[in-house]
Image (cartoon, rainbow, N blue to C red; front, side, top):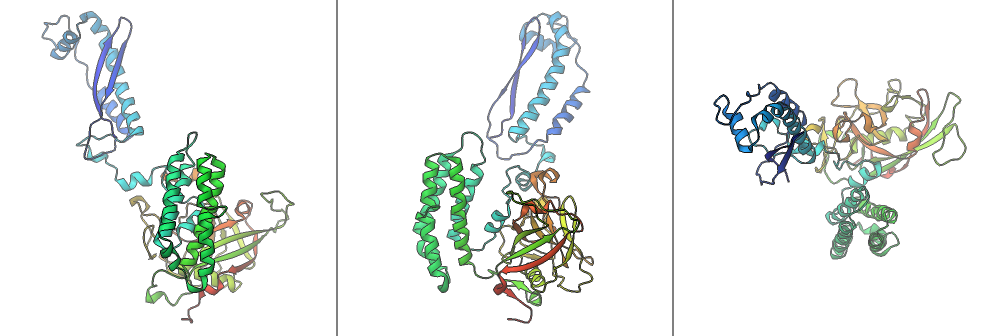
Length: 468
């Protein structure tokens, strides 16, 4: 709760002037945020006010303010004259410090200061606790359009991953409540969950459902890990449960959950997930160093999962280029923020598809429109993830993506904006994430090449323009 400054008292001793500031809790209807630097402006303004002259006796009429203060506290006038100046300076400094402290710990409700108001959207966006996916796996899992009950189970479990970040005494009671909630939904809504599976996938779905409830990495096992208060086992068990949830959700979402606009049916489209495997080759005689040991090699593999659920046109165009072999032999360029392919102008392949971004909380993408992150708009597939894969902008118009050129984004929170978001968030068509070989990205140098790119999974979900 916001804590407004209510009163202050002055305590005088023979050697020093000290201040005792009390804080009271008062309910308010409107919460405003006091900018920290306003405290300095307030302090600076107060320092320009000339102090009232000191008084010689309580009955003096030279300064009513000084007379009242001296009489009220019943101390000698000469002591007041020697301490009042220093005390005023200390009081001003203390007020500034208190305002800064309160601003950091809680928003200060001060009516009439609307010009310092920060909208709730910006307050949430710029909070360090903004729940933007920070890994490709998490972003891909959240992007699956699935049964509402499965999404509720997933949300309860995802919250535990944030609770695990709390240092020292972790809220195991809250974690236990989250798992019990997920278990209740899974058991109470069993028929609804299984009914949403396609007929040819029901057998696999039943197996996954049983594993989610009572399996070695299921919810019952996770609940026991939490009761044992073992954070390492909780982390492993949580990952296993979430993997099972994601696999079950993928069975429930075999195609797109929305209809594409008629004018965009002329582009290739991917109606689900696909996996692309890149083989990167060093051309300067150097080698790649594997993360888990092993011998350095001239070649290294990178695996990318592309998401047609959130970016069907962009992922579809990219998948077609991979199938056609367009990226075999493509040159790479390395910058501090990205690994970029060449522009492909000499290849004359690919479609310049419209910019395609699905906002969080929406059920279909926006086309030829960027997101206003400052107003709280965030994408389902964020750019602010190390290894995010996105298309470059078209050289003709930023409303369209380049027909061929793509990049691996090397997210670094040290170069990000407030809330840990990239300054380019919501400006590019992100369509996938690096899920294996992320450590290779930082070792790529300008001039290295893509020896080969292969669509190892998802070709059956690729629909070309001449197909219905």
